[in-house]
Image (tube, rainbow, N blue to C red; front, side, top):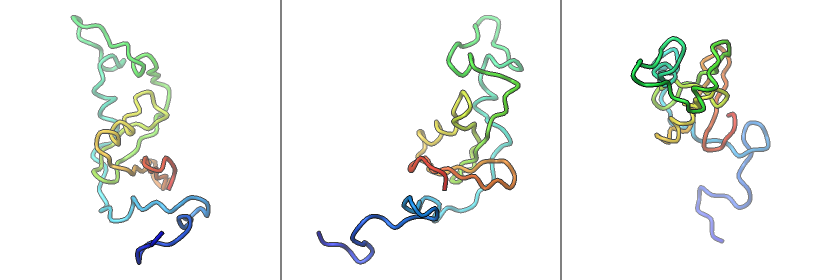
Length: 127
């Protein structure tokens, strides 16, 4: 096998944690501000206790509507490519994952101030 000048033989170089390859999806991203302070997809969903369905249409019975619990805190993530804010995989709607699947924007960061929690959907791990 012949390697180019920017390639090396052997396994990929370890990332910051010493065991996984480095994630390059943060490289070249321009900082963007979050577009909202909540998940717009959840806020727009009919059937929420604060947004009842119109009387001529019953509330949807999809998984997210059945599992909505107002007492449960939901982790919010901001897309680092466009700033879209959505609920994480631990929420019934999983709208941040849906955003990644629709847009291929690979990296999102938690909105908890000071947490620095960042997730790469391509590598399926924290970075």
